[in-house]
Length: 134
Image (cartoon, one colour):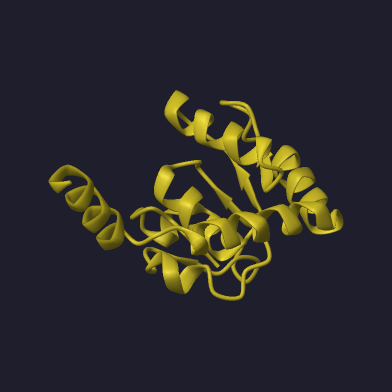
């Protein structure tokens, strides 16, 4: 399944039946049961995939997204394609590699576990208030 980013699905010119395209689905639903995600490298999608232990191919379109993508790659939890390298062959090769090499999934699951061990925002706020009050 893929989202079209608000573009009417019929306007994408895709061959029917090859990809299930939807205009919008909440990320939590979209990531259920996913083995690999291909995304733009934005912070929300990068964090969402990492929090679920899903390896990712990041195809950034802006420098900020590229920094996120390179961090994901440095952690071993995915691959970052250079800005402008959105050729289907490049994306396909990256997805095939993530599916074939279990180290990417293991690294993504380590990230998931690290994120799960972090204190909640409420706990961080409580600690900050306590530290300032002390």
